[in-house]
Length: 218
Image 1: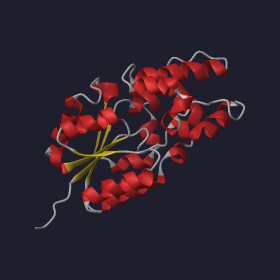
Image 2: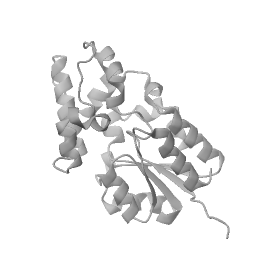
Image 3: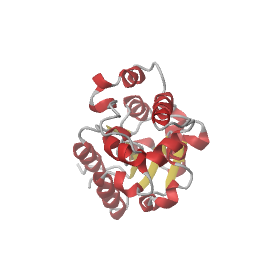
């Protein structure tokens, strides 16, 4: 029997396409003029350093609430009052947005496009965190035919309607889509929606993208 591979790759952005802020503390500290080692919370890379992350994983607060807390904390470190995640991301990462994109993501996206696979992003906060002008500054996003961003829809993963928005606009059944997300609750939501799912391991990005490529037949 001939194996049938998925037709579309649907990616979360933060953590999957871009490296997480936990991974770039050194860049953040340099950009903000902070002493190296100032930022000690490491999220999934060392949960013992980050009780707030543990609370988020236990559904005691949302991902947005987690990052707003960190935003305000870091703002105070530089003597400012930050009230948006966009401020944190733009100040921490500066003008060189390409520097924080995972090379494994770039490779997989280019391979999928070359193979004729459909490409979409399903994000809870792409423009909310990165700014409305971010898409024009990251050429990689031109490869995607569809971006569904809860910044505008107001429908957050793992709400079933978020996944449905992608499949309906692509005109594909959920089973034809490989969905990749680093948050387990969102990955579980994709599975419930009927998608083929890769729960992205930020500690093993190469292996995670390899699973996605296998499902796509790449």
